[in-house]
Length: 175
Image: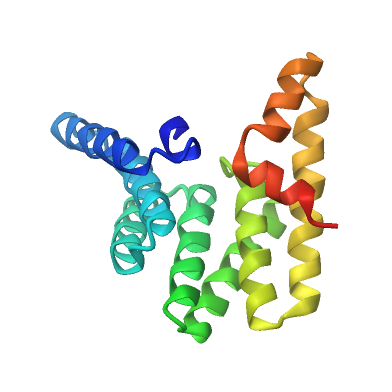
């Protein structure tokens, strides 16, 4: 994840593929799902949208098999992004709505990166022209990001959390 966030996408992909192989050989389905999700996110950044869809769907299936609904929001948001990039707006809207539905029901508590998932849906809604939904998604992303930031007592660490993670920087930059 760090390599991906630093923009070292090929290196990130290599590490994630190695981790995926290790997870498979150990029979760790949850780690497989996590690796596939991170690979999908890396492929989105590399504009390999078909590959991202395949990996996000594989990850989604694994999380659903494990019965961990709150872990699927990232997959759903990635699918929304990939389908939007492929100009399949109906599918993009479907996955964004599903993501938001889960996030709203749990109030953002439980998923690993709910602020990123809300922000991803904001971008999808904004591009499709669903302005009310976009405003809701962005306000929730900001609310959750600030909530998490206030839990970090060290000012330097809080600043790093808000500024060094690309999604967090992007969430904060939109007024």
